[in-house]
Amino acid sequence: MSEQTTPTDNTDTVQAQEATPQVEQKPQTYSAKYVSDLRQEAANYRVQLRDAEASRRELEDQLAALASGKSQAEAASKAVQADFDRVVTAIQAGVPHDHVFAFAKTLQGSNAEEFAAHAEELKSMFGFSAAPAAATDRSQGLSSGSTSADPASMFAAFVNSQLAK
Image (tube, rainbow, N blue to C red):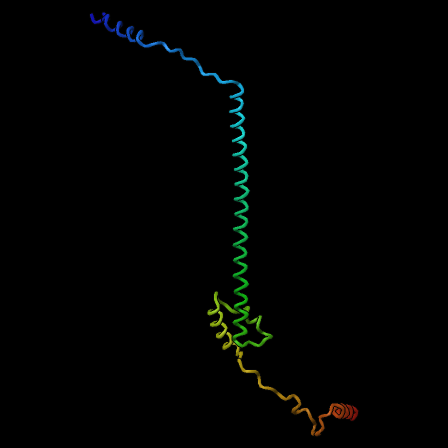
C-alpha cells in the first residue's frame, strides 16, 4: 500500500513549474572582430611578458658581473694596502734601503700594528740596527812605508816591485 503516490505531491511540482516563468537561455555571442581583438591583446601581453623576463635576466646577469667585479676590486685594494703598509713599516723600522722590499715581503700580519711588531722581532733577529755603520778608512794599511799616497807614485812602486822579481 505504500506503493501509491499521493496526488498532492505531483500537483505541487507542476504548480511550481507553471509559476516560474520560462526564461530562454540564449548563449551570448560576440562578434568575430571583438574576439580577434581580445586574442591580439592577450598575445601582445604575452610578448611583453617574455621581453620583460628576458630584460630581467640580462639585468640580473649584469648585476652579478658587477658584484663580482666589485669584490675583486675590493680584494685587490686590500692586497695593495697591505703591501703598502709592509713597505712603510720596513722603512719606519730603519731597514737599509737596499733591503727594504725583501724585508717587507717577510713581514707577517694583517694590519700595521702587527707588521710593526713583527718588524721589531725580525730586526732583533737579523741584527739590523738603526745606527749607520761605522765609517772605515780604506787607505789605512795600504802604504808600504812611504808617506806619499799619490796614485802615480803607488803605481811606480808596484811596477818596480814587479820588475824586481
